[in-house]
Length: 522
Image 1 (cartoon, rainbow, N blue to C red):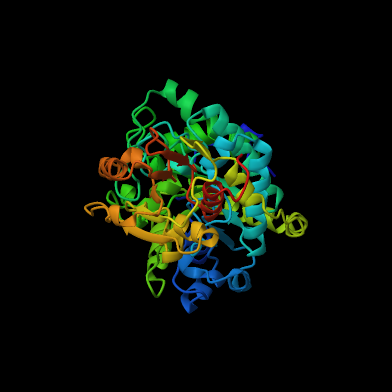
Image 2 (image 1 turned 135 degrees about the horizontal axis):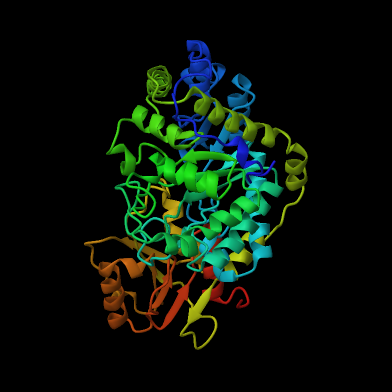
């Protein structure tokens, strides 16, 4: 079943006399508690289900979201998914596996697949669908139901701190085309896709992990710029959509996550989406600064949300039960319609049933390995200026990684992943040296690197004046400096400027090969 609404007459307001059935009675405590559990998707600690989580699943917990902290290797992840479903066969197991910079299954090494901006720059929707199918192959083999991907935000502001390379680009039409291809690839592999972050996080300069972003645009602009990819995703049958913690004054005076006008009026009634609607993590400061978790959950459900994502839970699961109790109490008090809660739980269960019916698609994808695709797709997105000859690097270089604080969406990284480009070059040119500096640090002594090429690896230098200053200093000291931009590119700098349009392991390997002449130019 697609996420497209086919019968608008079935959608009726759920606020009148909320919290009661048609006959005026509220459901039993046990029934309400199970419904409330069904709409929760919490995270947890550890690589095996803790006792509290197994108990909650047996009591109807509708889903779980996995993070890098839960994942050791593919076999363990598959065992974990099976263990979670042992206590609730319909439990949704979700993960953020976007490819590119946001990966959970490959958090230690970096993704084997280029991210959205690289795919958008490559410009081939067939390539995008193939990459998404391979991500679906990886996720499906791990027993995961729902991938919180793709990002379909239009990156309308080059200074956006949280979307950037996670977007297919700045053109709504191109973003729509690649969004549909990505959804088709993932869902064709038997894994549910989730378009995010409705109604569009691309035109912001704030990170919703830290504060509430505001999208200052009239409705006409939203219709032309931000909404087309969501319309396209719905038409493509996307199974889920994630709403963003965004304030959009043209639509409502409260954040989208809590807005009935945005989630029911716009997404359901106007755009016709009937699939599962999930929140971004409710502990993000954009909404956590406004209300307690239970109140956020209640207001989001009343607005039209079907599932509440909670990134972290208390060690004994108390926070999950507090959310359940807050939802039940809201129904009893008449602040949340039991019919609305029942509807939300029904959509969660419908997605679980969709996944169960896709076993043959997952089996077919498992036998459809596309060897070499990740690096080939990343290579198609490389753009180089200033190269007079190939190879650019003829000797082991000094690679200076200039690093800013990563958005929390990326998650924790380990040394091997931060080493990215240097490690990839060292595989081809042994003896490569690496230095890492951040804001407030000075450059290493580049003169002392005489006889070695110098490579500066930067990420989103266009957003950081201090980073651009260091690049300029390096180029003055060593005019032969090679600059590799792994984020959103800006004006070229250095003797050679290579834009990768992403920082995945695949993109770093492709860049290393391009710089060393180990592979043909795209």
